[in-house]
Image (cartoon, rainbow, N blue to C red; front, side, top):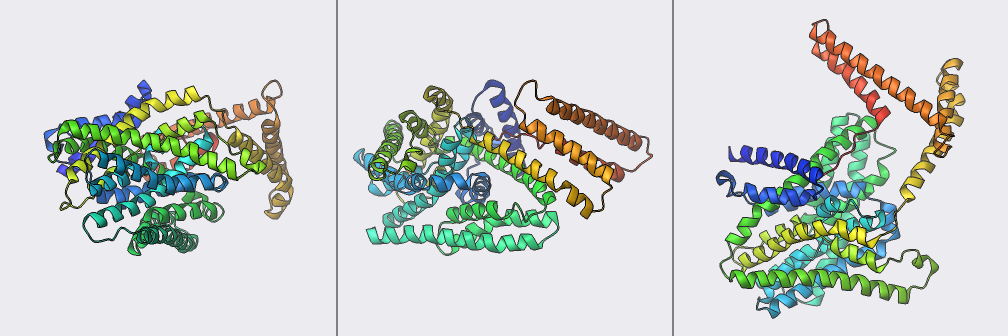
Length: 522
């Protein structure tokens, strides 16, 4: 019963938290973390904890796969140098700086390095949920950084734990070899996994099986990579990027539409559940602190949190300065950012569930485990709440230029697709044996669409108005048809099966006219 009660509580918290967040303009993760903390006060749920295995083996692969599927690979390639630097070098420097600061405050090197490793990477789910107001370029960079930096952090964590337990010798060669195996192995496994699964998906014709293989992709990539001690995170991300490039022209529209609906709902629920579980974990991080005083532990939280922000801001400025000094190409000037943009990037560097999962994964035999969980958990909550509230205000202060490239390219693509379809209409009509009068009707419709796309706003948009009116009339007719078949079902003239089949056809036509519904995750 406890498992069912937890599932029900999570779903209620996700739904009510999303409504409250939209109603009052509060970041959804902040509301969900707060609701999680309140749920932990319910006696029957007070013992629930966030299993680190669930985060690293289920939540993380699925969520990162969807993020990698929906990010811009073109932008990642264009900004690859900065992404690699923040996804690797910045993680190492952040972990080292936090470890040094905590050691200066009396924490042993072992726990200090583990805390540094846990807090080194930014969190992809938090960035996706809280970074919606960012300009597109900033969001893509942060998203891509968050997709690859977990692998670096997990290598540092393994070295720190192995060194603390005496199982690993902390040499530069050892660290470099593990990092190389993690990164290169993750890329190879991700590409191989994507190549094999894509050919499997292309051979399948059942939409359910196609989307089952889609769900299998990130889990299999993570499992295979971890089996060879490579980065499961990077394998999932590479597999997702590979799939985003090869599937658009090879997967049936019905499978793609079903998959989009499935992934949208799945990631919405998993994201929300993750934030609620983080909130439910908060009382445990404070209640289990036994090896240090509360006052000193809070001082460590403040010191580590400030170090984390300062190192990120300093690295962003220093790396850009070095790149500008060494790379004087004209193209490089187009990639430059402002001081205010780097402040935004600093505030948007959230920590989340991965950091907490790393801290919770510490072996029980390792001294200082309670302090590791307390410091890491506290900083995760502070990061989500403080930076989550601050980011929209910092974005407004920064006055970053709006990115209109997507809107411009969207218009260009629609015009080109409509024009080429119009040019091909006569030949395609003849090929498929369509009567000439039907082809003429389609030609007229496509000419109106093309005119609407090419005309600017204003008096010349008569074609767009005509199309909109025709769409509204068609939607009204669909509603009338739906009401009719429902009435026939209620009168027992037709069976429920007939109703469902006709309703599916009407729904598909309505979605085609209106487009898919917009969704806003936690």
